[in-house]
Image 1: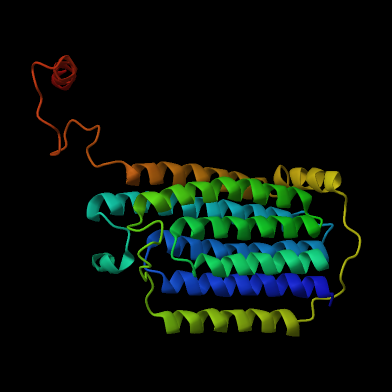
Image 2: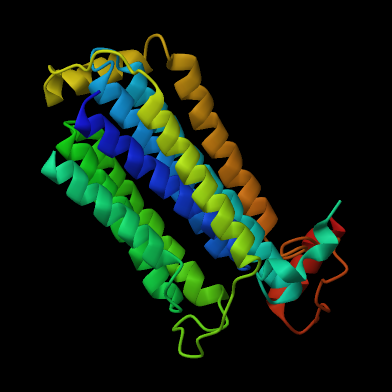
Length: 103
Length: 190
C-alpha cells in the first residue's frame, strides 16, 4: 500500500474521531453541527483517496464526493432552520435545555 | 507526499482547535481553515475540480456559520470562557475508539495495487460531467431535488409562526387609521 493512501486514510480517521468527540461533547447546536461537518469531511477525504489511488479511471468516485458535499449543505440548511426555530421559541440553542424533544 | 501529509496535519489540527477555543468566531474560522486545508490536500492528490469546489463551498458555508454563531451564542467572543461541553470523558473515548478502528481498517486491509497514472484535470472534469449527466444522472438529480426540499423545509421551519398569516392568534390588532392595516383587513374580508 502506498504511503500517500495511508496518510490520507489516517487523516480521514483523525477528522472523523475529532468530529465524533465534538458532536457528542458540545451542548450548543451549532457546535454539534461543526462536529458533524468534520465527520463528513473525514468521509470525503477517504473517498477522494480511494478514487485517486485505487480507481482514478472511474469518475463515480468523484461523484460520491459531490454527494457528501450535498449532504453537508443539507445538514447546514436544516440545522440552521431548526436553530432559528429553537432560538425563537426558547431564546437559546443549548441542547441540554431541549430535553422535551425526547421521544 | 509531503504536501498531503502537511495539509492533512493542518486539517486535523484546525479541526481540534474548533473545540478547544472559547471564541465561537474562532471556532468557525478554525473549521474554515480545516476545510480549506482539505481542499489543498485534494489539490495535491490531483483532484483539481474537487479541491477548488471544496475551498469555494466551505468558504461561503463557514462564513454563514460564523454569522449564525454571533447571532445565537451567549458569548460569541469567548471572553467569559464559558464551558459548553458535557460528557467529556465519554465523548473523548468514543472519538479515540472511532479513530483507532478507522486506522486499523486502513492499515490491515489489503487495498490492492495503487494506481500511478491519473487523468489530467480537463479530462477529469469531462469524465465527471459525463458521469453526472449519464450513468449517475438519477442520483445527481435526486441530490438537487433534496437540496431544494431542504431549503424549503428550513425556510418553513425558520419562519415565525403566523408572521404573514391572517388566521394566526398572534396577529397584531388592526387599526383603522393605518392605511396598510385597513388594506389588509379589506383583503381579509374578501
